Image (tube, rainbow, N blue to C red):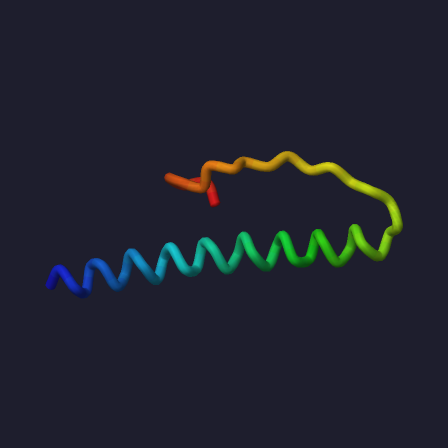
Length: 51
């Protein structure tokens, strides 16, 4: 049963990462096409609920 719980947690973590990754990729593409440098806030600590 512990294995199943770990798999569910890993799946949720992967989903969080993929959402974050997709958001950042889209921001990079839009910013690169605009021709202007845009500074966004960044949280280097990706622990907890923040991803």
